[in-house]
Amino acid sequence: MSAIRHALNTKREDDFAAWYQEVISAADMAEESGVRGCMVIKPWGYGIWERMQRLLDDRIKAAGVQNAYFPLFIPLKNFEREAEHVDGFAKEMAVVTHHRLITDGEGGLIPDPEAKLEEPLVVRPTSETIIGDAMSRWVQSWRDLPLRINQWANVVRWEMRTRMFLRTSEFLWQEGHSAHATADEAREETMMALEMYRAFAEEDAALPVIAGEKPENERFPGAVETWSIEAMMQDGKALQAGTSHYLGTNFAQASNIRYQNREGRETLCHTVSWGMSTRMVGGLIMTHGDDDGLRVPPALAPFQVVILPMLREKPEDEALLDYCDKLRAAIAGQTALGEPVRVLLDKRPGKAAAKRWDWVRKGAPLILEVGGRDMENGVVSMLRRDTLWNTETGKPVFQNPDRDLCAQTVPTILSDMQNGLLVEARERREANIRRDITDMDALAEHFSREAKYPGWVEVQWSKPTGDRLAKVVETLKDLRLTLRNVPQNSLPADGTCIFTGEQAAERVYVARAY
RNA sequence: CGGGGAGUGGCGCAGCCUGGUAGCGCAUCUGUUUUGGGAACAGAGGGUCGCAGGUUCGAAUCCUGUCUCCCCGACCA
Image (cartoon, rainbow, N blue to C red):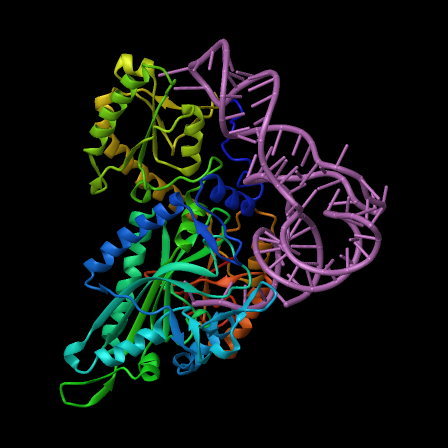
């Protein structure tokens, strides 16, 4: 077995945080902007986000939800209406107080004191209040319900500590908002969104997730119930990858969203909100990345196949390019995962071998290198990103299929790869979940070990509330652990609560989290 | 926001303690020879040392302030 020369300098097992950052820069996904907590998303990173948008947006529209757009700025008083909401977000809001700059006389600019806003505007951290305002105008009658809206937008939360994609001051997301006549209907919508996220994560992003309800202490500020999908990263930590909230009538009350029912009585609506963000890109990296960079699931890859002609800057290049272009056209004519295959013929000058490693780091699923000898034999040299190395020789594994057959097999390979990434991630997750820990000592022991991948623990608990829950949360905090969610469809509880010793009510996941 | 570390050509770093002509590696450009698996050699270009003040004849270096990034914590749908 020969040593493999990986495409990255940092290995996951040596320094996971450093590895994560190296993937982002080596795969050319994003970079620091110089503005605190804000990043520049580069074409490859943004292309992946665009794919996520496309696929999730298709699901949103298929569910009958319509897109709209609401303002970036929210009057401060909108926020004051929902007390818990204020508490939850007040500490992390960007505020606009002036609308004009003047020179300070020393070559600089300062806000013009004369141009102070009567009422400050906050930059939206989420849009419940401003959309609630609109909903209060749009909803009059029971016939206007349900009202189901989604917006794709940027939001700002002034976070203390930021990490690219995982927690940035400004991030991109979609937020769905709906108003319903009844609690049952609103809860059904909450679950619809949760299921949509689960399906998107698993089918499109190849990210296995646990869908479940967040405990009381982890609820969205102002929500009655918060549900999430949780994914396990390769370092064993949990990442909340999407949330769906049943808001009861709290926000309807605050924004005055009422309708006249069939009996003519004024009635409060029940509202719902749900969101998924660019954080998903971070989850993708930490789930599918390896020591050679990112591996993009084919459904999300901006380019699923990259063709690299081995150009020599000589007259014969023309014939080679022609050969490659026929290959490109044949592949582009194929359908994989329900869409035309996205293929790039990378004609940039430069050595094919150097470009190959660029695309490996970016995680393009299939790389096809084509040289003069391939052309003579009517074949291509194919490299699969998911099975890159021959561990015996320490060299990349090239296959040499016939050019025309190759085009036809691309869809199968891509769909195998899509499925393979999901299976691999799911197996890794299952191998790192413990379900046999029943007392706090064992829990502490499990997470105190030097183990690189402590993973998650599913425990049984009595679902305490209020102060008793606060005590549990405090205990877990000492172990740097958090309650993740109570999975749907889990086995009923049959033991005692690991925290209180009482009869258990349900099962809940405990993990370190991002 | 607390503790720690760091900002010097595109990237990674040395120089700072003890002030005196801004350096190295990679990358880039040009040339030559190579080239079917991450090329070699030679030459060249590129930086007012994060920013703003101060001390000094002289500041990357010393002092003050400030911004940004990384790690740990606190915080965080």
